[in-house]
Length: 178
Image (cartoon, rainbow, N blue to C red; front, side):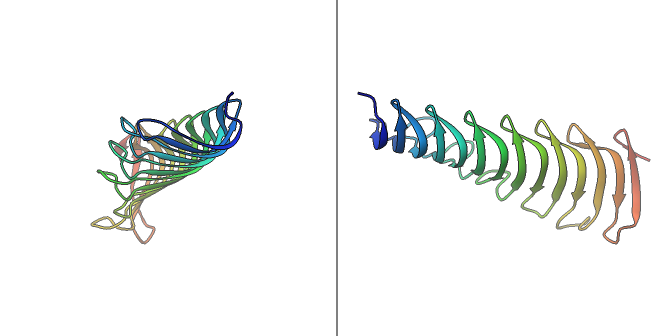
């Protein structure tokens, strides 16, 4: 018969699932660790529905492009969707963090992205890109300066630049400083 209830399943490539089954599929609470291959070392601990990651969970990446990355939050049909926190592991974004809303695996809605160097964006996201909010510089020459306004294609579009004391330094209109 098909697995039903609490159990453990292992595969020849080293993959392993420990958790609840329903009708032969992962369903309920469970932990899956990927074996040898493309996703080796990846792990998901959380809710499953009909054999897929769905609900509250934690996903950590083992090897490859996303090595060391971690997501804690809501998933719908294996995609980040709802409230969550994504932290970057190795690579050029190491130490960066996003806390906020996701839709269809992208930043979407209200969220805060903090770079490892202290730069920070707080505001609205659309389809994975900054849309309307405040970008504040962290360490360095422009520490404490802010851009408040709209973004287009990840660039400053319409808004105001303030120095660290809150004085207006510049105004941007359609991507050009005035």
